[in-house]
Amino acid sequence: MEVLSSRVLVRPSDPERSRRFYRDVLGLAVYREFGPRADPGLVFFLGQGFLEVSGTSEGGSAGPTGIWLQVRDVHAEHERLVAAGATVTRAPREEPWGLVEMWIEDPDGVRIVLVEVPADHPLRRDQRFAAG
Image (cartoon, rainbow, N blue to C red; front, top):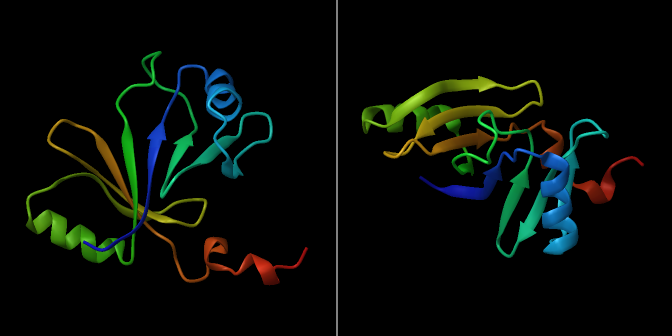
């Protein structure tokens, strides 16, 4: 598998408290913000990687960590991983935000999200030339 990008996902019990902690207490720089202005998801720089704090945990705690991996072709990875015996919890599908995602689990149940960024997705546009 050729991994193009990755991030660690955290689903906190109190999103605002966690956003303040990572942004204001730890002082992590914000890479991007998405979702509703009143309750945004934040992606922070972590050296060569990223940490995303978004959504809420279902059990009242942050729950298990998830891993986000950007790949070139999620459908090819799906076929390869199924053949290798990986536990696929959700087959590839295009999400409302335009990314193609599939979910797998590691042996301990940690969710790993494989993501393909389609050629026409805004993440592929050179922002230096975007209309302002």
